[in-house]
Image (tube, rainbow, N blue to C red; front, side, top):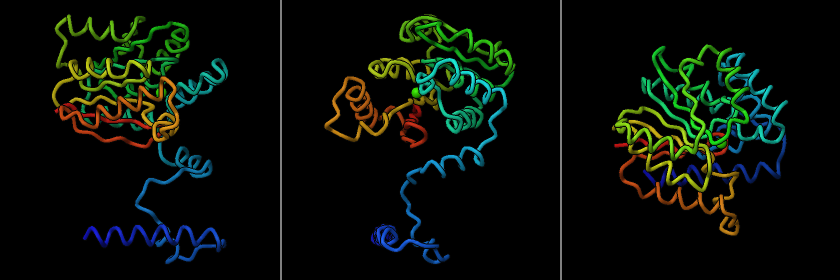
Length: 256
Ligand code: CA
């Protein structure tokens, strides 16, 4: 069985290589043979198609993306992508999540995407070290009708999470999204596991870090931290694990 799968994979790869030397329209049989069971490398064309066809981004979130690009320039890359917003909203919905937290708010897209998927009494504790973008975030949370669900705490996320543990809220969160300081991921993660209920989910962003984690010659501080974090989670039997190659890589770790 495994041999059969490996053979089909090899054949798919061989066809893909042959195609480079034989361009032209694909016939149906040939098209099927070039399908790989590996995650697709998204060309700009395919990515555009995915975003257009694969989700229904609410107007308010699209407007927030545009306002972020206009006001934050290059920093807009810190905002999660629309397909990731749709994905995280669906995860929260599937889990029936009510109590959530995120570390790293920026202009508030991810908080809004998750808050929109929560029931009326759902909450997002939104942690950010800076309030530089909180005005923009609040403006769009109001427009999205989720401002009442979002509890913005301007402080280091570790401090906020520790305060929640001290307040006896361990084991009460359904969903936690980590996307702040990459060198602090391990510290956020430990606190997230304390705060989550059994079966709760921690989602960690940027775990592929533009691919640099897979290149051992890249040794900048953030890459090294994320690489070490990924290795730690791989061996952490307190969670079930699935690293999803959406956007810049999203690890899902479900507390057992
Ligand atoms: Ca991110």
